[in-house]
Length: 124
Image (cartoon, rainbow, N blue to C red; front, side, top):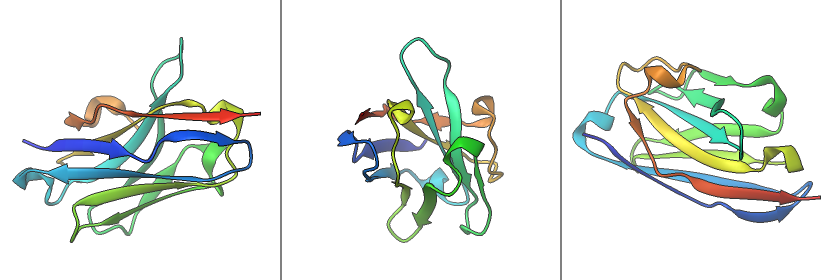
């Protein structure tokens, strides 16, 4: 089992920054790829970013490339999402997820464990 707890969300003005954290516990976190997803009201959950276990491979949705950075510290069992240049359209609940197969994928169905989410609100 893997337990995931997100933190770092909040209210920020457009152009501002936030850093989300996802703390993982459970022995099966070892080797897992991690992803960040988001869901805005009335919309489907969408992929944001993913990273493999060593942190060497990352993937991003096009709309966040150059603004968001996913990283991880395996010694702390924590994954981060640094979000810069935030836009109102980034407003959503952000979820982290673990894929124990270790492949960083954009497909939510491939992930085995999910956190409860943290709200990010960007005002214009």
